[in-house]
Image (cartoon, rainbow, N blue to C red; front, side):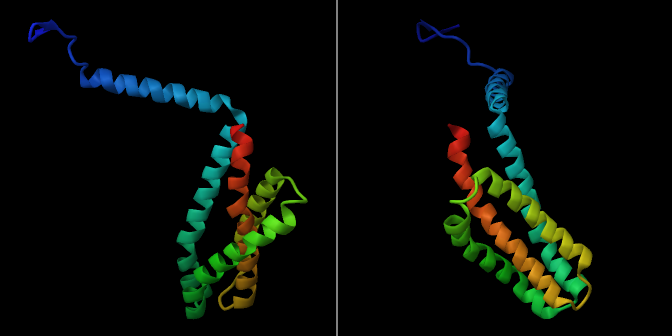
Amino acid sequence: RRVHGHWHEAAPTFGVRVHRVLNRQWAAFKELNANRPSNCFMWSSNLQSVGNMAHSTMLPYFTQYVLQDQFADRWTAIIFFAAAILSVPLWVILVAPRLEKRTIYMVCMCLVAGAFVANVVSVAPGELGLFFSLLVLAALFSGGLIFAPSALQPDILD
């Protein structure tokens, strides 16, 4: 069509623009999927995130209705996150020089999940000692999960 004396191509319709965007995203997704280590890391990180969200969401319910303890209800999250953050230097200084980062990541994921499952299965109302010992154990392994994914990313992207 002619606009102000010059020939111009008509602007693409909304459907054409959406189609172009989806084609670019599909190409990027196929490229990402072709990189197997990156793909495995992406899915394991997503699985870890879902597990962390489920644990964080269910913790208040568990302390209130299963443990039935006000102290645990108030202090569980603080104790868990403090222990996890304080354990990161231990993982970086003591464990990382001795083990491969990938091994640390996989072992920590399994042990955190195991500690959470053990907590849900074995703790009865009022068993604060068992609950907090399993919680701190899970937090210590969560410290490894805080540092390991960031340490793995450069290896996977290369």
